[in-house]
Image (cartoon, rainbow, N blue to C red; front, side):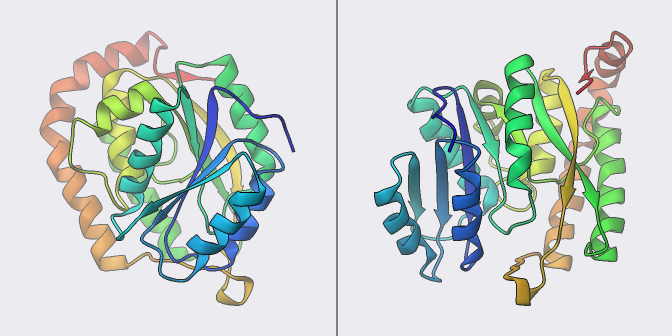
Length: 258
């Protein structure tokens, strides 16, 4: 396992992910330390198993939400505690096995080179990706581009992202939105409006079957309704910021090459 970083933290929000989260955490710790897990009201027994593991692994911490508050809320809780502990950056990493842990060092290295930027994964889908998810992602990507004047984020909802903590908490503590499935879109729009530059990283992603331990809490109607609401709500703010966003884009201040 790599030595513990005093500045960069790997943060894994989880809710009833089953045994897969234990595999994900142990694999991630081979490439990064410390690792913090926010158990967001899980009732499947994995929180207790993670706490047993943390008792043996000094760079693993488990944080509990007594009830399920949503992925975004779990990230905000972990980020606030990370800020209090003196960390400057947090890499969010899904608990369901979609993200390759082997990519963690690349994200961390890019953040060290560009500490002012958010490092955003751009998923490289394989044949396991559900068609409706891929098509829905394309539509969400268009609207994220509209709201940010195509400032730089190449994927609207990929969960593997590395944030500067000061900027992330500045935008998320200023709103009550973005606490559930809409976290990546809400944070992405607001961080672009804040002027945080983007580094995009092509990253393989896989969708595991139930037999492989895959768990999904995605609900087509509910979660897409939440995204539609988000994009409608931000249209006035986007239009007001377009001149500034266009100027920044023309000046090359929005996107940094990986």
